[in-house]
Amino acid sequence: MPEAIGAGELVVFEEGGHEVAFFAREDTEFVFGTAAQHSYPLATGYYSVHTSPQALKAGEARIRELGKQIRTAGSAG
Image (cartoon, rainbow, N blue to C red; front, side, top):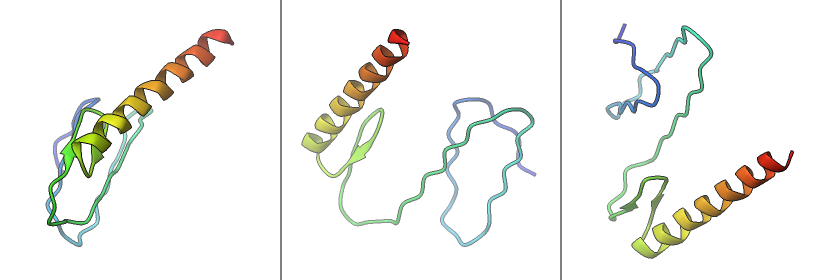
C-alpha cells in the first residue's frame, strides 16, 4: 500500500488501465481529475487549466467572482 499523504496534497499517477483505491482514516474530501493526453499547449493557472492565456485570465476572474458571491451570501445568512 502506498504511503499516506496529508491534506491539500496532489498525487499524479502514471497513465495506465489499473484501478486506484483510496482509503480515508477520517472525514475526507477527495477530488479526482482525469484528462486525455493532447498535442496542443495549455495555459495553466492556480485554479484552472484553459486553452489560451486569454481564456485562463477570464476563467480565473470568473472563479474569483463566484467565490466572492459565495462568501457574501454566507455572511448574509
